[in-house]
Length: 78
Ligand SMILES: [Zn+2]
Image 1: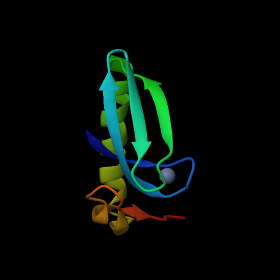
Image 2 (image 1 turned 30 degrees about the vertical axis):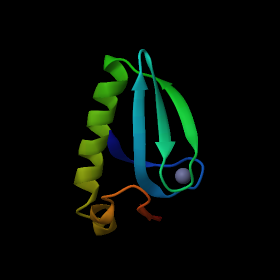
Image 3 (image 1 turned 120 degrees about the horizontal axis):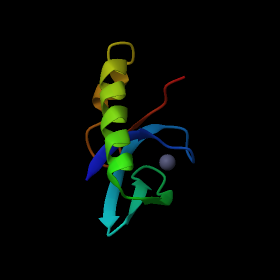
């Protein structure tokens, strides 16, 4: 599953690849390759939905976010 997120490692807004594995998931930045293991539960899933919604709202002020579509895409937003 691909989703948009700000990467803590490279500081870009990038596309992340999330790979659920049971109760955990691997969240990988497709730009710098930084990988984090996160718990994969309802709480996290609803948090992801909220983040995607928040980023959608941010597109109004940061049109660059709309350019994030495919793995490897990244934008720097100050
Ligand atoms: Zn990164």
